[in-house]
Picture 1 (tube, rainbow, N blue to C red):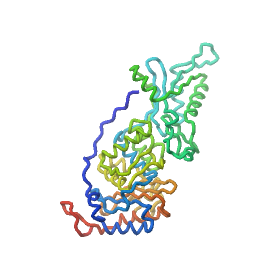
Picture 2 (cartoon, rainbow, N blue to C red):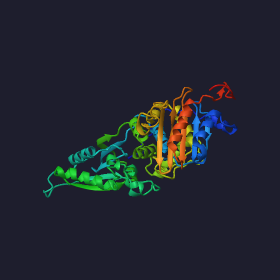
Picture 3 (cartoon, helix red, strand yellow):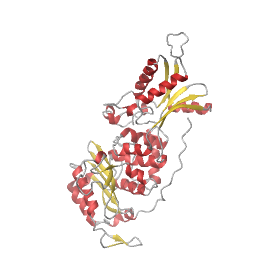
Picture 4 (tube, one colour):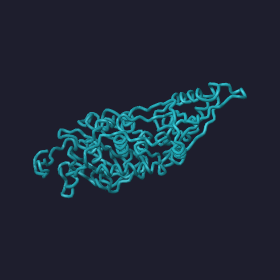
Length: 420
């Protein structure tokens, strides 16, 4: 198939110098908040990175904010921002049955995380109606000739995903045609074989036969480009729209969806190429890049590295984006929904913090948008090795919301004393 054309996008405003980041070397811009951060982490300062920005992008307080750490699922904040910017709010993942000029039938997918068995059975029935017969006992019976386009097995998992993770549902293989996200109670380790079984059994139940061929995406695209022959879409199933995909990735921390969104945004299903495209996009947004390393879209890779300063700037930057409301709405809410549904319930932060959690062995992270009486604050916290990170994170969010003893700024941007 031809390369997907990028949709027309509403570009975010130009990158500007962030006053808080520029003045960080002169000391904390909000001494009271800086003191609260240091008090919350106590003697574990060396395993924490914390950054807090205000609505103008000024870095109010920062603790090891430039040290790159393993972000776990906070990586999804990057991949979903990239996808929303590149693909737009109305984007849907498509699974299609194509008929080529030579009569060849072919199924092509884009990784719809909710592709169901019932939907793939529809493809089988349409294919049976287009080619083949329903009398397998007849000498003249013609089997359905069907190709299925898929990524090679070596691309099903990012290379540095822990082998132990790959057997669990959260570490399921990333493929273009993924029934139920390639997961049941555990990961489906051979999704191509599962797909073949379902297509074959569906057609046989209708008295037909099928001759199935799995083809490599890259090889098939090259062959079609050479032929230049037109194709007809016989049947199509579409995913939920982007706002639902973003919510699945961020609110519920669905790894498969985050991986697919990064690949589709990059228009590259090789995870290394997609990661490079993501990195270049971040650089173009003016995100601090020192030490940053993207290895996947979900955060399951232990090779990812982000800083709390990069994440807080990303959040602030996306708040200026024309599609900012979609991005914020995709996140979990403290005390109310998603992975934050039980966090800080009954406190002043409940319903006032939209964020993303991250959890790996030895890693805890939370980053998001905090509503305060002084305007939104963009908070990122990453711990790699903390003893009781959840308690510390709660203290930091409460302090970030409540501390008002910060310098105000005159029209020229020069700090002076006074209530914030």
